[in-house]
Image 1 (tube, one colour):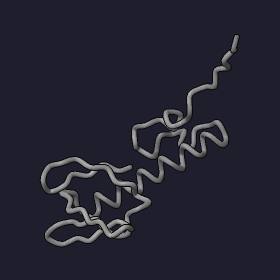
Image 2 (cartoon, rainbow, N blue to C red; image 1 turned 90 degrees about the vertical axis):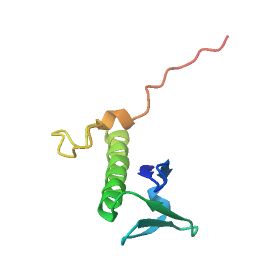
Image 3 (cartoon, rainbow, N blue to C red; image 1 turned 135 degrees about the vertical axis):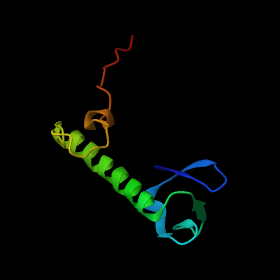
Length: 97
């Protein structure tokens, strides 16, 4: 989910997989696959950058889950969130009586 600010100042989150297109002009309008449109304060480039960062985080998390190692060991991604933060917590067995 990416965080955006509507023109009214209200914060909202959108699933980037449901974004069909982003139109620029006087206002930036995000149109989703179901036809909904959101007028946001961010520029087209800012919206695209957030989508790219979100997808990169998903790929890094999948890499960690699959291989158990850091997908960006030198920290070149610059998101500030370590990949292991996306990994699930360790599994703790439960003993039933």
